[in-house]
Length: 258
Image (cartoon, rainbow, N blue to C red):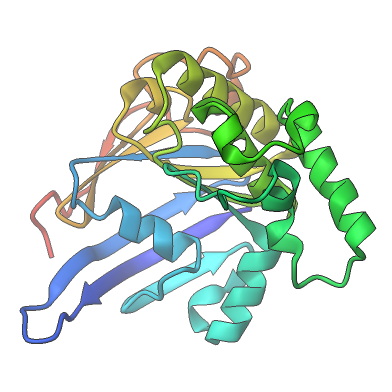
């Protein structure tokens, strides 16, 4: 899924307080199947930008084109339909229902689709099998490790067959070994299915699985560069074959512009 952001702004106006300019004039283009990591200090605008990309928040200004559609011009109902059809989400805290079995957690995004219960369960089992957890389908989250819970969350994101996957600190609650397993899984699935991934992370080891690393500060993009070292799971030459950047580019508006 190709993404184009043009002059995107997001301003929050808390009651009785000064406006907060969380995102300020962001321009960003992402090619289909590309993996992009957003990095920067807490409060720099990463999560807000992910929310805009995932159609969870509307920009205050600017244009957001997802594929061939200007989604910034859609109604909230139309955005919700687009989100349910095209976008999967993976969060740091997993966001699993604690009393539901794994397969029931995975099937949640299909609740409002016309599929029968049997078809939805079959799709959930296929998604769990894709992340290596079909044997844990009847376990509740408390019976699984953090890495397994995140893999269930990935299966839940994949069940809608998304073209865009949004990941907010996907390894933030995991140890280094589990985090590496999750990122290798995500990268392998993305490569096999041509899924575009945009993730926010503080961890350089997680960001190394991306084709590009975009740094944010004070609501603007500061730098856009390839990872410092090739990701272990990335096929050789993938970034160059996709036309990925081969040098660091510095945004002209700088960290304090706007």
